[in-house]
Every structure is written in C-alpha cells, then in structure tokens.
Image (cartoon, rainbow, N blue to C red):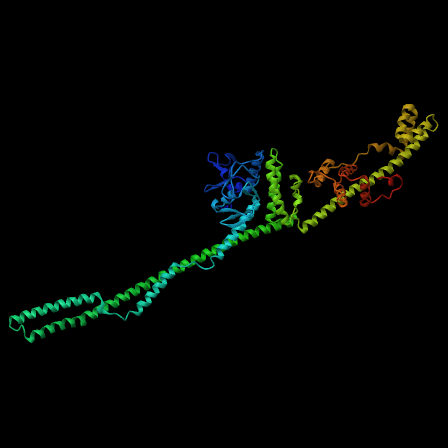
Length: 591
C-alpha cells in the first residue's frame, strides 16, 4: 500500500524496511500503540483503514529509542529461505530486512519470489542483487531495496506497455460484422419472395382444396339426384369449382402473403438496423476503455520514472552541496558494509557469527570494487568508527574542496609549528641575552667577595640560577645584593620572569587521540596492528598529517616519533617546510 499524501510514513512499511519481520509487528487496541514483538513501539498520529501513519521524524525518534533497547545481537530460529525451504539457525544482519518480508509488504506474494545465480527474482524476472545472503536467506538494506523496487516497477510497467501496444480484441466487433452481413443479405432478398413456399400459402391451399372438394361433392349429389350423375355438366361444374378456388388463391391469398412477407422482412431489417447503433456505441466505449487503460499505464510509468528522476536530481543536488555522489547501488553497499561491521563489533557476538558476517562483507567489498569504489577504506582491518568517517564518491568539486581544506589545515598546522619553532628560537635568544645581563649584575655583586671564584665556577657548571641558589646558602647578604642589582636593571630583570611564561592555550585533540586516529590508517591486515610505513612518501605524509593537527610544541614531535619517524627525518622535514629564522646567536641555534 502506498503512503497517502499528507499522512506521513506508513509505520509498518518503515519497520519492515528497517529489518523488522512483518509478523513481529502488531497493534495494541487497548492503548493505540504499534507494537514490535509485543512491546510498545510508538503511538501513531493517524490510523486510516487499519493502517498506522506518523511523520518520518517521529518514526526516527521511536526507531532510535528502540535500537538503544536492543543491547544484544539478534539470532533467529529456522528461517525461510529464497528457495522455499527452511535452513538452520542463522544470523540476521541489523538494519536489514529479509527480501520476502520486504516484498510481501508491497503485496508481492511469497510464491512469486525466487532466487537465481545471486539475484532475487519476481515471477521469474530479475528483481535485484540483495545486500546479503546468510544461510540461504537474502536481506536488503532500505536504500538498496527501494532502488531495486523502483527499477523493477519501471521495467515491469514498460513490459506491460510493450506487450499491449495493440488494443485487445473487441467482442462487439464480431457481433457488428455478423449483423452487417445479415443486413446485407436481408437487403438482397427483399425482392425474392416465393409465397408458394410459405407455410401460410400451404394452409390456404389446403383450405381451398377442401372447399373445392366440398363444392364438387355437392354438385355431384345435386346432379346425381336429377339423373345427370354421368353427364358432362358434372365435369364442367367440378372444373369450375376448382378454378374458383385457384383464382381465389392467386388473386387474394398470394397478394396478401406477398405483402405480409415483405412487411415481416422489412421489420426484421429495421430491427437489426436498430440494434446496430447500440452495438457500435458499445464497441466505441470498449475501445475507449482499453485506450484509457493503456493511457493509465503510460501515466503510471511516467510517475515512476519521474520519481526515479526526482531521486537522481536530489542526489545530484546533495552532491553539489556535500561534494560526494554515490549511486543508490553504491550507497546500499556502503550502508550494508557499515551495518555488518557494526554488528561484527557488537559485544557478545560469537566467532561463528562474526565469520558469517565477514564472508558477506568480503562479497560486498568485491562488488564495491567493481562499482568503482575503493574497498580498502572499508577493509577488514578498518573498524566501524573509522570506516563510518569515510566520504566515498567524492566529486571533482568535492575533491577540490578536500584539497583546499587539507592544504588549509596543513598550512595552519605548519604555521603553528613554525611559530612554535620561531618562538622557541626567540625564547632561547631572549633568555640568553637576559641571562647575560643578569650574570653581569650578579658578577659585579660578588666581585669583591670571597665567593667570587666559587660563583664563577658554579655558573660554568650549572648556570646562573644554580650559582645564585648556592650563593644564597653560602652568603645571604651577598645574594641579596646580587638580586637587588638584577631587579634594578630592566634588561637583567627580564631573566627573572622567564620561568613564569605560560604557553598559549590549545583546544584541539590531545596527542594520544591524534596518535590513535593516525595509527588506525596504517593497520597491517596480517597482524591487525599498526605497522609504520616504510615508503618515503607515506612517512612524509605522516609528518604532514601530524603537523596539520597543530599540537602544542613538543607534543607533535612525540606523536611523530610514536608513529615511527626518526628524529633525523623530523629535522629534515622541518628544514623543508619551516622557514628558518634570520636571528643571530642563540636564536639561530634552536631546533
């Protein structure tokens, strides 16, 4: 049953399209809720002729709530497969529905559904390639089923039209032809009437014969009693009586019979002619009805193709906005593969169940490669979370946007890295100069004290800060004099504030998150663990990827090292991508 305009989504069809068995769907008259396996699912906003409807948004909310309540993978008992037999317990893929249930919800009887060489058939004709075949039972995701159903309807309607380009034989045509023949024959026989062969003439002739015989008998009796029984007068009288009856037949009966027969034939002709017009009218009505049926088929085909074209236009419009375009077949394969991955990673799934799902996933990846998609993005070594982040089917415009975004991210990351690099160099230079000024002031303070030689030695061994800490322990008054001189000089005082400088705030992914995200892209299919790539281009790409995240200074190096890059490689890439500072002294002696 198609969804009525203004009534929203047919809840039963939506549930079936999302993998719920048609037999598991019910209705609770007590509270007005649609049920799934006896449990309340949602209360429809409209019910018409026993069919429940609601908006797609409300259905999605109810469906999401239902999914959250399903914490364990689903198994079924014996299931009905595409050949009409039962199979042992099999694993039902989440988010899919059996082909027979899906087709049954659209009124296609189970006996019409078959399976041939990997394809589902209806009435022996190709319907489509199912998303999965587990234990002899085929399954579809919603996108794939709707696409194949739409194409099947269009092909079926085209076949009906091609097989009915001629109007069906009109039963009234034969009746009209026969009647026209009768009318022609009747018109040709109007003047060829033989009154002597009619039953009426035979009756009149018999009557005339009886009267003639009666008259002759009377004449014989009369003449016989007079003695003239054997005279010629009797013969003449008998002949006269016979002639009178013959004359009666010829002059009165025959004209009357001719007139009556002509009138009868004329009436038959007029009756047949009167019947001709209703037959012709009925013939025209029947032809018109056949033409209307054919036109209705054309209209239905136009509606189906228009809907198909609307879907294509919508996908193109989405592609213009998102930069990604997938055919319905490709989208179905992506959806199915993600569904299988998600289910294979479900807690509590057995090894045998995972093997069944993996086998189906391998078949989908083969079809995906044949369709032009890169199956490695959805390989067995890629988990659901990573695979679901892929954006396959990028258009040229989308690829340009990706390149621009990647360039922008890389440039921003490199700007951050270069800024950190330059700031590090500048910080070294500033610290060096500030420490030199502070050292000069502290040296002047201890120049005349007994600690002068010791102070100089400590500076050389541990730096100014270490030397001052030792001086404070040895001679606090000299230490206070040195600190006073440092604080009184603006250049020297800057050295005191270097230890309080805070790095700029960072709000991106932390180092561990970046490391995890990148390592998932380089999983060895054999070990199913991260393996650092040996290809030089791939290693340089790792550097670029890490730099694009803009991690705080030092953390980016840690991630690069954890990804397998060497310190030498990092330095070489820094030289390639980071513009060197033009500073002097310690500022140019940085990284």
